[in-house]
Every structure is written in structure tokens, then in C-alpha cells.
Length: 306
Image (cartoon, rainbow, N blue to C red; front, side, top):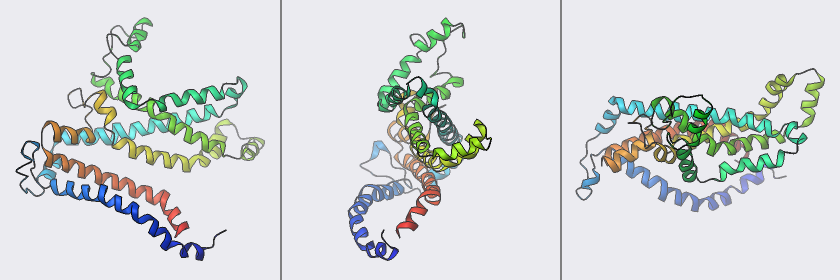
């Protein structure tokens, strides 16, 4: 087993091997970030790129802070898209993992087929999933409305993707369907590493099903839950494809989020400077999420290596 002194002796080699990666990070991430930051302090327009933009200082950021529309965009991104969307995936993923690891599926020999079927949504490209769900949710021809009408649950078709009361639940459903398998499989892998002796000991001590879940299973899954929550937050906060291809930020701007706001302001309104300011705000919030990730996860690994 390598000693601490041996690991320290390998540090120059490790740094040397990381140099190419840092070079590409500087070229493809740091430089565009700095350029975007510079543009955010100008009034650069998509329709006047040859002339360049005039320096206007923090005017774009002042407009962001004072804009009610942007406040709504931030609320949609943080609360609806990220907090609600991630919470739904974590809860359903945990429940699905417990089901896949249960003895019921073993009893009916359904464990293998259920895990294979779980991979289908995950293997489906997001664009294909969105098109399929838009067809299913169509108020005239969608099978979901036909089912609801046939069962007598509703009296008239529901426009899931254009009614304010239904659009966010429908959008979160589409995202969850396509991304839930990864969360469930991650929790399932963590469950299978749980020593059976712990569950047997808890059962002998008289712990019921819910007590075993609360005091044995959940504490064992805590690292996996933290990692998946943080990673899902990263992926969801920057989401553009699902929102844009499903609702394009509508009805009106009801589902407009920060990623779609960047696109709308830059390529529809032509306000490249304002769009860059929105991007800087997004990057700042993601840096905050990254600091949380380093605080809870990566800090321990860095200490072990260095």
C-alpha cells in the first residue's frame, strides 16, 4: 500500500500529466468565460457585430436586478426546474431502487426484465423523448387525453403544454421520465453494497420495515443521495433542450428559464450584451453550487491524495 511520502513523491508526475488537461480548460472554458464577461459590460447587438458594442458598465446587471421578468426567470429556474425537478427525481429514484432491490421481484423472477426496461428511458435521446411526450400530451390526438376522457376523469381535453396550471408538472414529468433511471440505478448500486448482516441484525433487534429504512438503509445511502442531488442540480440548472423543445419558454414566458433567456435575448432580441450578463449570473450561481460540491464531496478526496 503506498505511503504518504510515496504519494508526495509522485505529485510532480501527477501535475505534469494534468498540464494538457489544464491547457484545454484554459482555451475552451476560461477564455470564453472572460470574453463573455467583457461583452456583458457592453451594449453589443447581434445586428451590429461589425461595429462592436459600446462600453456601458454595469447597466445590463442593473437592468437584470430591477427586471420583474428576470425575477420570474430566476424563480422558474431555481424553484420549479431545479428544486422541484431534482426533489422529484431523488424521491422517485429512491423508491424505484428499493423496489428493484426487493424480494418481490425475485419471487416472480422479474428483477432482470425490470432493470432492462428501466434502461429504455435513459437510452432514449432527449429529442426523441420530447417529441414522443408532446404527441402523448397533445389535447386533440394524444393518448393521455384519450385515456382521461375514456375513464371519465375529465370532461374536455387538457392542453398540458399550454395551460399555466399544467405546463410545469408536464415539463417536470418529461424530464423525470428521461433522467430518472440514472438516479435509480445509482441508488440501486449503493443498496447492493449494503451488508446484509446489518439488516439481519436490525430485524433481530425488532426493527420494523420503516425503522430499517430510516436507521439503516437511508444512512448507508446518504453519500449516494448527496452526490446524485448535487450532480442532478448541475445538469438541471443548465437545462435548455427540454424546456426549449417542449414549451419554448411558454405559454408566454411562464416556463422561461435562465438557459432559454440567454438564447432569447441573444438570438431573438439580438441583445448580446444583456444575454452575456444573464450568462455571467448563471455561471456565478453554478460556481456557488460547485463550492458546495467541493465542500461536501471532493475535499475529502483531495486530502487523501495530497
